[in-house]
Amino acid sequence: KTVLLWFRKDLRLADNAALATAVDEGAEVIPVYILEPEDAGTGPLGAAQAWWLHHSLEALASSLMHHGSGLVLRRGPASEVLKALISGTGADAVFWNRRYDPPGIAIDKAIKADLTERGLVVRSFAGQILHEPTKLKTGAGGNFRVYTPFWKALEASGEPAEPIPAPARIPSPASPPKSDALEDWALLPTKLNWAKSFEGPWQPGETGAQKRLAAFVQSGLKGYRTRRDFPGEAHVSMLSPHLALGEISPASVWHATRGLSEDYSSEDYIHFRKELVWRDFSYHLLFHFPDLSTRNWSAKFDAFPWRDAPDLLEKWQKGQTGYPIVDAGMRQLWQTGWMHNRVRMIVASFLIKDLLIDWREGERWFRDTLVDADPASNAASWQWVAGSGADAAPFFRIFNPTSQGEKFDPEGVYVRRFVPELKDMPDKFIHKPSEAPLTVLREAGVSLGKTYPLPIVDHGKARDAAMAAFQGLKGE
Ligand code: FAD
Image (cartoon, rainbow, N blue to C red; front, side, top):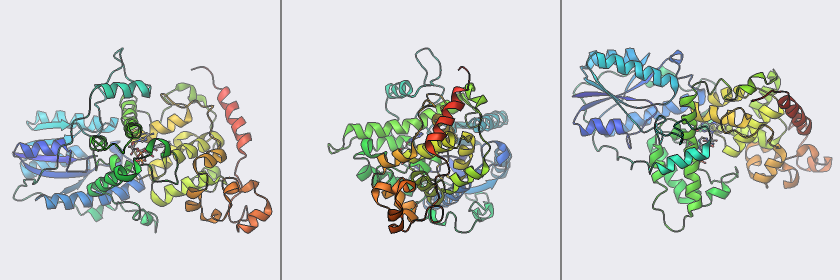
């Protein structure tokens, strides 16, 4: 038997149910990755994630080689690519691990129906998320809209299955089909220098993911519950880009937090699992509300008077707002392709509530610049901050960027790292340089409006304007 093993958002060998089953059943396996066209609906692939994907595919290809196999790269609509591969190889089965974005689901359903009709065996497996969105139901049999009952239901449904080890060897046919050259896909950004700086913090691929998880469990996890909100500290896992492309399974991450010694507090690892489950919850929402990235969950927000302000949007994107914690976050995003969760909430609140710019602009920017860009978590989180989402923060909870900075980055460690022009400001004014006396600014080498911008809006006034706009909306 020959199985086409279609890799998608599961670029790993360990805990890969489709792969493990094919190998267990004694099949010859042809691993395939298909770059699907953007208009298939599964994209667009953001530029930062395209960089990641390039390196992740390199890593996957090399680890498949070490297992006696290889990766076949093909480009085009998945149905056509698979059919061409089937007729070229005589494969009699196609296996994959399920994806949960609505366009992906539609493509997979159509392919499954078509290939089954042609007499092929098509099998799909679980593994991208911890639960199947059709299985978890509320007491009344509906879908969840609120996180806490979702978490409780997921917890009550038992531990996720133990991860399956990577197969020792992957049997390969004598003459596997030809592969495209990865370079020809031009996934790496052409803009000079951008993404070069991603190489420092990241190691895309399964090995990088496993190392990151081990390092986090070793050090970052202790204190996670209380310190995870401090962007200057190393108490979050930074596993999100690895999870986004499935280089590690969420079940493996979950199980790495079991059986720990008494040095670990259950508060820390349970809180960590709860965060991991927010990812699942986001997929649950996306599965049942396919327009999550484009349509307000709460229709009340459809009438929101968003401002068309491209100049302000650009200042936000470039980290030139005059609010140091916002600017540090946006520059961290540009320089590393990632941003700390607390700061994501602050910059999102700033865009939506201080600048009154539509959350969809932010969602789009993040999708293009985040290495962990995820159709479910990104859309759900933007709607959460906007107040338009399911189980969202109420709109009137408007972050004050100065006090958020003072609370979560009290000595300005994070701001100094990403906004070096403020590095010599005293702690007292690091989050409010516009309130510092001239002598202090001079001593720190800061010239407002020249070396660092003045605030582009007054937060107090912006807050009042946002509240007025919100109160103008009618009903639920
Ligand atoms: P950890 O704290 O170590 O958490 C472990 C894992 O749990 C994460 O890797 C992630 O998979 C999951 N997780 C944690 N928090 C959340 C959350 N609030 N929602 C969903 N999953 C979560 N996350 C993405 O993966 N992709 C996105 O595109 C994305 N966009 C976001 C946009 C906004 C406006 C906001 C406020 C949040 C967004 N998040 C997104 C959620 C969250 O910020 C990141 O998952 C987290 O910062 C990743 O860092 P970490 O791996 O160190 O997280």
